[in-house]
Image (cartoon, rainbow, N blue to C red; front, side, top):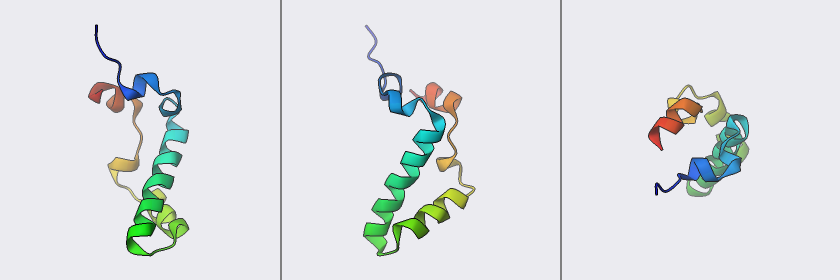
Length: 65
């Protein structure tokens, strides 16, 4: 029997908008702690970033799981 991935079992990861928001909040708070920057500023910088890492693509996530 195949073990299900976290994406398949965690209902919070299925909503791409909520997933992206949560990811940005998590990364920005961790970055703020490490760098001493304000978490809101870091979150804005991440949200405006064109980096693919913060662009949620459900198909790509499913293929990787």
